[in-house]
Image (cartoon, rainbow over all chains, first blue to last red; front, top):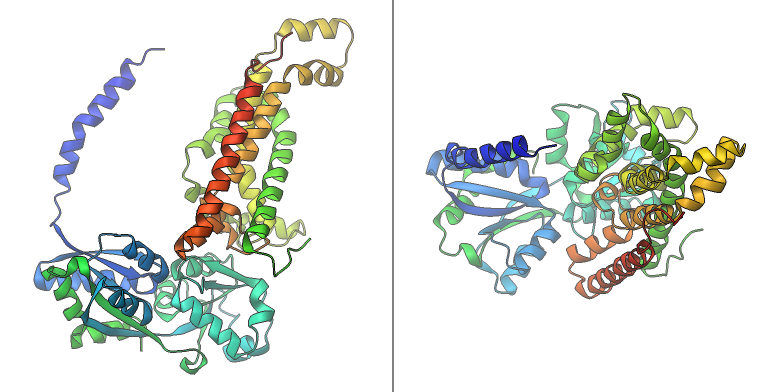
Length: 255
Length: 230
């Protein structure tokens, strides 16, 4: 067998690469923002609105809050952080990795008990308090504030110890939601923002967990050390506080 | 056997990992031998497509496998309905489900060495055995197996090591359940994310030493060619 055709193909593709790169002319990324998974979808849409207004392009990186914190501690190139809790940004400020003046709460999250099966969550409260739960998907409480809130809600109904062996843990809320959306797990305790997105394709059935069942999921944002002189990142954080953005955030499923 | 709840997380993870890798290896050797024999000797038009399917897990991102498996294993998915009908229940987030994923994921690592070993056996040796009126099964057991012992060892070690090294698939279909689906690689990932670097170092170093020792062992065994001297 001869390698000539293969080599020719490789050479051709290599020749095309610069062309492809040129065709991909995007506006320059002016700020990289680390966003907790529950807010990723909202942040992308808000970043688009902000780009239309300001011309600044924001790039969103989503992961669990714990993971983002570890990445920032290890020098990841983020200019700002939108956390799923209030503690992590304050910890970053205390460690000299973020700017205290920019710290603010941008959203309050809510949990939903959700199933892909439209008939499963008829009376969510009864189901959580004493119903049969074969499997329940939550985010890892060690890494994701919504996972911790789910743990608190289960402790509230005195079922944490009983249900612990039946929990499946996503490594962030996105994966926990995918477990439920795929039907692999019948039930999940998930952020309302993600359930709203999932319901566009799969209505299923759900029940809002009362806010009093867990500590409030106050989500804070902060400018990181690296973004101190980054006008795009600073502007995006200011935009999040605007009435227009706040109205949008509520529409995404936050209180 | 359930791990003692007071025991450190890594003991449960070691147990799950060893159980998974051993079972995967044993099942793949049993399934892989006839498959490898067929691939080594068939002239059927199916050889190439089947060969390509067997090799797929070597090039596919594990996430592709994980994504389709999770959908397939859901209660209303095709595999989920099959396992339910067979009385196995649904396999997502169970040890059995992770075992199924591992079987697919490590298949080429067991089949390929066996295939090479079987293909290298001179047909004349088998003809001689047939002339001496050895039945096909007898020929396989007393001629083929002894001759392909090095290939069998390589297949077993590679299958085992590759399953121990599994991460993406297990993370996606396992649901990270202690004592059930949390294997060492996933535990290590958790430790790194939670910034428990000391524990992560210990575990990572342990896995590194284990893999190195296993490959060293394979090199020693592999000094003899893939087929034992006739």
